Image (cartoon, rainbow, N blue to C red; front, top):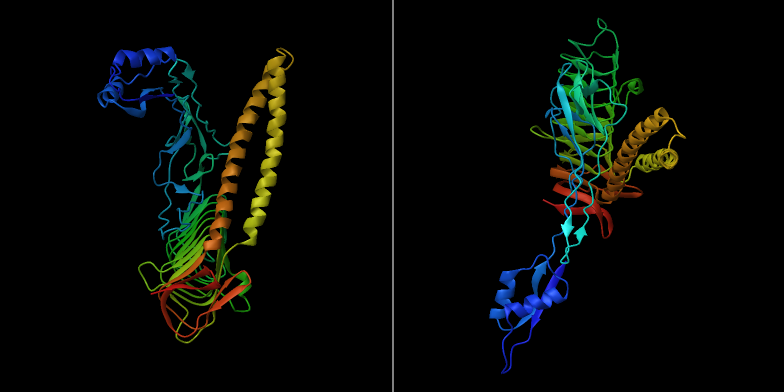
Length: 447
């Protein structure tokens, strides 16, 4: 792809000419990409050492296929972590509603790429990009009649971006949840404009949004839970086991008191978390515009626990646990087993399609079409599983750098655990960061 020119300066004889350089290139078979200006400059300099005087044209690889969301405010259930493994506090916002026919997502196919050329005129093939396929189990959507690459809504509901496309979940709205409404169990997202009364239960396959406060109750969501006010529970009381909050995504609330919360992604509390049991796969962050105190209870997170103040001057026992979550290891193994099974099925289908191609007429067109459709669906599912495996593997790696961070103060009574290692805060300290250092778990920095 490159030709280099060396010129030894003349010693009493004639200088090299352009024609001589061109003749030397032609003798080597170089007939493409000749750089006349570089040749002239090398000759003018009298001497040259490895000057590029001919350059082939490199092939340009094709671009991978991609999905483009046409609803900018659609919620994303795919976990996203920045390069340092941290997530900024975010308001999960209101539930966005779409209607049948609304455009949701566009698929852009991979490109073939542009071939290059060697110095000898031989073509350099380009590698094509990898195409993407919509997942086969997307609900509440369909392909546009005039564009098979565009997804449109088929029902009224909330658009949610997932691996392999976008779905639309139905939304159920009501003023409050109490004895008058009864318990709520809905296969979609639930939007409650007011409060959830004590003893009630709300279960949703999608998100739960509460405009008021949640008294001791049960909230379970496959997606995110957002409580614009606060939440109270019964942790530490005899009946506390009957009150809990679980979500597959992130949890967000103004404040939390004596509540048990489990989140598949992260937990964000604006004001205070008092005597709570908080468990998050990624991050727990307490404090945004308000006080940001974690006082008492137990907090677990795989990557980080952040607050403005940890503990209290009264030395309330506050246990913070960071690092590898054993559930992540189990999940990674389960994903690998699932992927292996799908890859074996895809291999069998590939053998069938290869046989059909080599033996025309031996396999019915209907069976070939079904095999191709199933193979495309399996390929998309396998890629989705690989993406999930990569995310979990990176989290496990990042968990070694897990931190407990205090922006303003930390008090005696705070205990930080990472596996079998423990660190106790002694006395009153300013803000700082606790994590794994050269000498084990300890204070890494102090403000």
